[in-house]
Image (cartoon, helix red, strand yellow):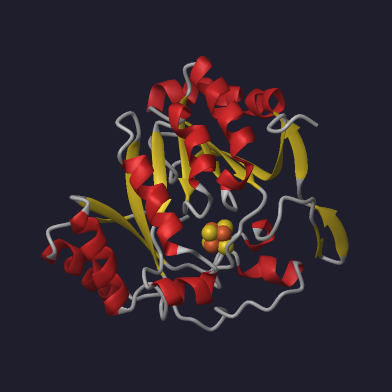
Amino acid sequence: MIKGEKGLIFNIQRYSIHDGPGIRTIVFLQGCPLHCPWCCNPESQGPVTPLTWIKNGQKETITKWYSVSEVMAEVEKDDLFYRNSGGGLTLSGGECLVQADFCANLLHEAHKLGINTAIETTGAVPLREVKKVLPYVDHALFDLKIMNPLRARQVIGEDINTVKTSFETFLHTPTIQVTPRIPLIPGYTTKPKNLEQIADYATSLGLKEVHILPFHQYGSQKYEYLNRHYTMADTPLLTNEEVQNIHDYFESRKIKAIVSGLE
Ligand code: SF4
């Protein structure tokens, strides 16, 4: 198989309104180098290899290799919705950029058809992979999580310098609109020191706005299907007051904070 000719995908979701402007089709690509304990798509973690799980006693293959034209055949079904709502195609994961060649081919094809493009990423890939998609991305929804280098490495396996390099590369590409997003994970990203470090980083780059995404438990059942322990099962959701306090903190730092939809 030629590099980038096919991509391994675990879900294609139509009519999403949370992952970029307008009504969108989300393509979830398999593979992620990180291991966030709160991950709502744990099936995507690990290398880009086909995966099965056991659901209701039945073994299910949940990934499938797609060509660009097979994905675009799905995406184009909602072309009218995109045009009426300002929507389009969003690539997600996993970390979609671990399949950067395929992403670039898909996004390029979407652009050729006049379809708006977005990616959801945490940027935990080498810069050369990021560069492959830059010409074809309209929106980058970029997750900032744990800023302390040691904690980021220990808790989620993330090299914060790599993430910053990716983030700043998207930010400094004039054709790309970047939305910094902060998943609010109790005990991890919501620690005051971490929020302060995110605000410091945002300020140092002149950012005026972040989106904050309250923790949810929607992926918990998938851990059972994968026969894995979900360590966040007993973690309570944030109260409205807690979310409001975090919102107010960013606003006090002169950064507009928008409480956003779900990942
Ligand atoms: S980066 Fe996203 S997909 Fe990867 S482990 Fe973290 S939450 Fe899951």
